[in-house]
Length: 115
Image (cartoon, rainbow, N blue to C red; front, side):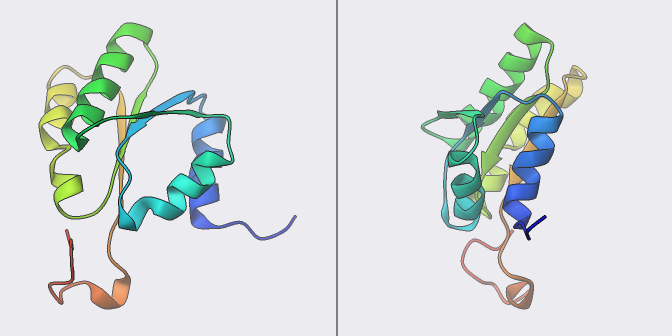
């Protein structure tokens, strides 16, 4: 078996868990994940704001009984998911939120969109 990237592994794991739909808004630090998602058969729903991704994943999980999945980039993209995550958490709704992060060497340096 050839080498695969971390992004490909995430998509592979989501597929193995039966994920069919992901809600998200692309940004710099999650582009590699979007590249892997593009090559998969998981459907991506593009939202207009990260908060919408979290609420859509919550609603999807409530309606289907499946785990809702949302994606946002680092920094403000990640923090924009918080209200939707909290809403799902308070009602014990299954949700996975995937966010980007700056490179390890940049952590703690006030890098652009460091979360």
